[in-house]
Structure formats: C-alpha cells, structure tokens
Image (tube, rainbow, N blue to C red; front, side, top):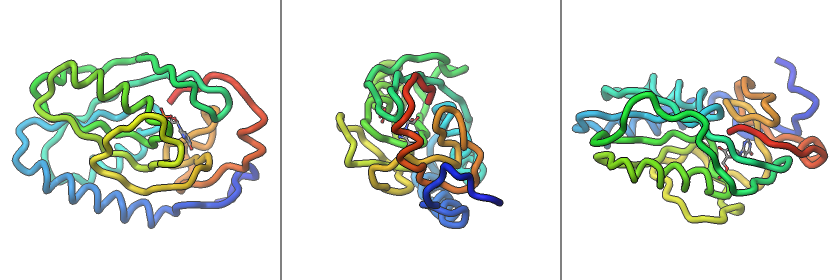
Length: 189
Ligand code: IMP
C-alpha cells in the first residue's frame, strides 16, 4: 500500500498496534471478569477502529454504545469548547462504563465526557485511550488503560483523521507539519 504524500513517517505499524490492543483487551477482561454489565462507549468518529478491534478481543460479555462530540478547532489546535452532538442509545446508570477514546491531547474532551457520565451515576467509570500526548495537557484527566504515549505531533490513521481524511489507514502515521499548519476550521472528533 502506497503511503500518502501528506505522511511524514509511520509511527506505529499494524503489528505493533494489534499486539498492544491484545494486551489491553486481556487486562480489561481480567479486571472486569466479575462485572455484571459492562458497556464500552466509543467516542465517534476517531475511536471506531480501536473500539472494533478492542471489543472483539475481550473475553468478557459487554455491550457497545457510541457518543459523538464536536470540538471547535483551528487547524490542529484545540480551542477547548466541546459539544455533545449524539448521545448514547442506552442509559448508563448503574452500569460499568468504559469510555474508549482514540487520543488525549489537551484533555478537554475526556474531561467533558467524564463529567457527563459521572452525573448519570454509573456503577463504575474508567477510560481506555489508545494514544496520549502528555506534553499538550491543559487539564488533568485519568487514563486507566493506555495504548501508547506519543510526542506532540499530529497523527492520522487507525480511526484518527485530519479534516476527516486518512482515517482508514491501517497504521498510525505522523502528518507533515506543513499540511496541518496551513489550514483552519472546525473539525469533528
Ligand atoms: P483534546 O480534547 O484536546 O484532548 O482532544 C481530543 C480530540 O482531539 C481527540 O478525540 C481527537 O479527535 C482530536 N485530536 C487530538 N490530537 C489529534 C491527532 O494527533 N490526530 C487526530 N486527532 C487528534
């Protein structure tokens, strides 16, 4: 498969991602072995690939639901305003909730999600995040299960996008800086 011109380099290849997702699934399956009602909540659109792979490797019964958010960004810079554009289908009250997110950057999105779900009184609330950019954090958020820590670069592929492009690349790659620094506008997660 040809690597698109906008890509600077591959950061995490398919095998590396698959091995880590398997490890996370094993850990989550062990931790939730006795949980009555586990629901994974994927944050659209970015987490859909990660969630699909993770969920299929869990060995404990679980449900899958989704939530969609919109954060107003300028180019690749988060402006901190998060808005709910699609809520989960089912209630989370009294259930074990695991929020599945693609990446934590400033932390505003995950913080918003945790506040939203906490108010609904789940039996428990944890987070599973594929990528973490700790250098960019503006607000502290708990990450219970983490795939990889990455530097402050814009990454695409495996569900992650830039302006809704590159989501279905099978690997995670660094976008060339000139691509994301020249544009501005709103994006969806
Ligand atoms: P935060 O609210 O700043 O933590 O940003 C979280 C959201 O920003 C993620 O759910 C992504 O949608 C998006 N995001 C942040 N960094 C990247 C990146 O490097 N690639 C693609 N999306 C990103």
